[in-house]
Length: 239
Ligand code: HEC
Image 1 (tube, rainbow, N blue to C red):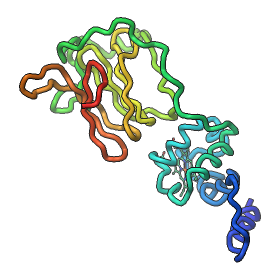
Image 2: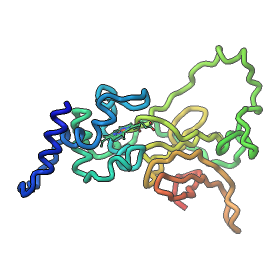
Image 3: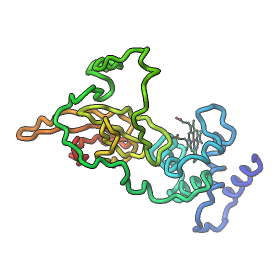
Image 4: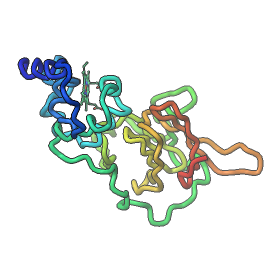
């Protein structure tokens, strides 16, 4: 491997080599920009080649564009990023997220109050950011008896960081892809999806609209490109 890396550097250093407008070679991009850390990782949080091969292609692209690898990927062109992603996953990068049609709520009821059931609005259960749910009588001995009610797979991402918020009988959740989901907390069906410009890691806060002559609820969050959003809680429309 060492000699391969050396060969790549030598090639780059040879002056006067004709510059070919070719599709970049993903393996070369990897050797030049990623191998030092990812070939023989020195810490368990760094994915090795095997681990990278099972990532969704779009999850790698996002890590390079807006995610934890954006600094390492700064010298790369868009074509380099696609090439290294396709080399790592052995799969083609296709346009992101096929249209989301399954699991949508059939007859969504408008949100009329924040307190429809237990509240976990924003980062904690109250403005003191407490981390314990007091609205339901849940004891340690109850935990082994909890049953899975529904599960939701977030498309196109490799990890989940945004803490879900529960308000008005809904669950609001951001994602690494920038998609923000509003789910019905009871059934797990999807009420709406909003696309932010970059990954959303923040918890989501819901609150009443306080503008004169207006009513209803909004949700607030920010993305990894430093844009803050207010979105209508009922429809996901950008405010
Ligand atoms: C200087 C060392 C270094 C270099 C160079 C580097 N990485 Fe990483 N990479 C890391 C570390 C450390 C992590 C774990 C970061 C974390 O979890 O916060 C990581 C994580 C990742 C992840 C997982 C991201 C996620 O969101 O789960 C991917 C994908 C990745 N790197 C791809 C690449 C690619 C492709 C390149 C080359 C273009 C590259 N890295 C270059 C150190 C590096």
